[in-house]
Length: 317
Ligand code: AHM
Ligand code: MG
Image (cartoon, rainbow, N blue to C red):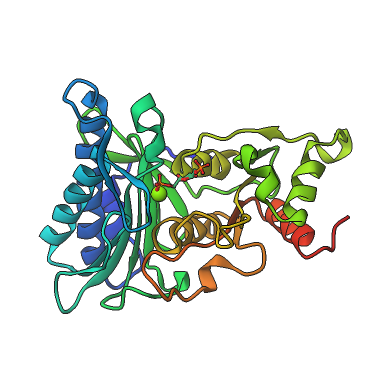
């Protein structure tokens, strides 16, 4: 990881990209960043202003909806619609894609990822994925930009590597990390260990292998699990290792959603030299058939993900 010496703002960075639509993309990313700031401010005061807890409803995926999920969804939607550059929006909090214009980008987002952490003041963040519109169902390989913002950092790729931008005192996102590279191999694994009994044998054997003592191969790996993809992925991006939300008994597609969780993180991981897989196929290659489709996700350091795949395929003992 290189700490950058020349400060560049998020807006200037996107405008300086080699993409022909750099100026339009800068407007969309800038509006997402402003929405992120608004959400961060609200989160900071949530306990004081009655914004914790649930709405008492469930979303299209059968999950309990938190007040902040809905509120943040409106903030992100309004910010994107204001750009006039977006044709369709896909959000974790909306049953159907929302058409806003005949032409423009297709933006898929999770307004508050990790929302089970909201009421305990844990780390949450917004994930976004920008594709050329107006088709909302496109492979991850079509993404023109993807990123997320846990607290007041925005991590972004435009397909030209991965950079991170930190909110400064003046309210500007300024590049703090440039050309992030994930180590080829890490020392930690991140998975909901309580679900062990629901995993297929290959995943169980792989996690057991990570727990064995063998100093030559750097084992045992440490276990780290926040239960918030933005937080767990951010650590994995910076320090390497592997994050897994595998297929489970009774939930063959895992938990995470392709369009606004797995695909944007996969784009970031690959741009940082890492890998993202269902265990059997590259996440970026999957063509979505429904807006909220779920996929198993193994993401992180290239060697760690490859070894996990070998276990699933029965190649590793
Ligand atoms: P959410 O978008 O409803 O918050 O769900 C996604 C989250 C991820 O951030 C996290 O990695 C995972 O769900 C945690 O799930 P679990 O509590 O089953 O371990
Ligand atoms: Mg989520």
